[in-house]
Figure 1 (cartoon, helix red, strand yellow):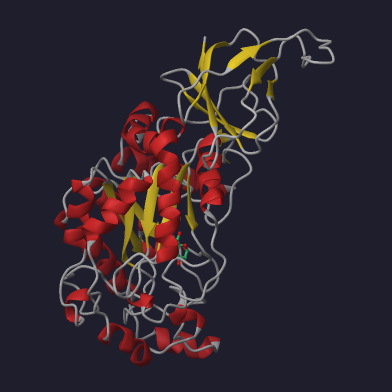
Figure 2 (cartoon, helix red, strand yellow):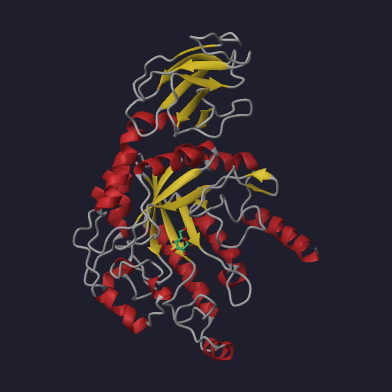
Length: 451
Ligand code: GLC
């Protein structure tokens, strides 16, 4: 308890010193992000060459000398960030987050602090400058993922997930005596300084990740407080995730990051709903993974986006470009599927959130709500025959239409008894009369203009 209180007090003290922001100011700072709802994650690095998961170095315990061949053969001749940005734009993506460095330590920019970087590979050129330029040209905001973990840096101590450390505890301790985390902590600060000064305005920062406890690493190992202060000083508007192990502070994170699963409701911290962004893959891996066959269908992905927004969250959907620098066909097909749906339905996503109490989702439907326009969006997952019951909606609807073509949907509160040719309903319910034929879109949406 004493430690907890101390941590809480420490957190507040730091809050006051490092980041003096009221709750309302935070909401304002995060407004674009809460409105945009849909981002693209891009996991790219030399792990695209083995094409067997971005953790391949760890999973297969590959020694530095053997991992080197991917570095020596990295030459993404098809890299065209303008094409990536155009694809993202067509899919309806509003912001993008690129892995500037992943756990293997490989850097996609010309960092002054390491040689393990793209400019020393056969490709020989910075990847990030052209990337941010291309996405900004499409009006897409840009962010970086930066791995706190580094399996290449000689001063990053061996721990329970390091691929190359001795398995034996005593030997590991001895080996770690040669390593100095102070040097690594400085490296983190230097590299983040580069990333947040060389490439203009950066909108989101995704730090990854902490695993405190025995043989793990947490905020003391990264000196997360200092890192966050630095980040907020360099880019005061930036939105930062919660993986630097600063959950005990109210300033060291902006949103939480459920990964690879769908929360069953809007997540809370300390009893209060918090901003959240779920990151999801098309298939099981983040980096390009040639032989991964658990790809989600465009339909599943559209539903995932809707469901996320219906619980007040953002979706960061990942693409893992190939070693040649292209999006593979499976990813392209899915992005196009989502884009086709978004072309007609983005109104039910952008600027939307969970519906207020009193607007219960009808059976087999997901509901989102735009507070500004006071419209409710009913996403019909399973198209019913003719009648869609809206429980308790009587007197609440001004007008209703199908979103894909703007055609009117008639509604009424029929008599409770109905008859042999007509639907009955509860006295507070509304029944929408749907066309028998399901509209030919991935998920049909009904737009309700509320009173
Ligand atoms: C995990 C994994 C990593 C991936 C990330 C995305 O932390 O370590 O490979 O980049 O999730 O959120």
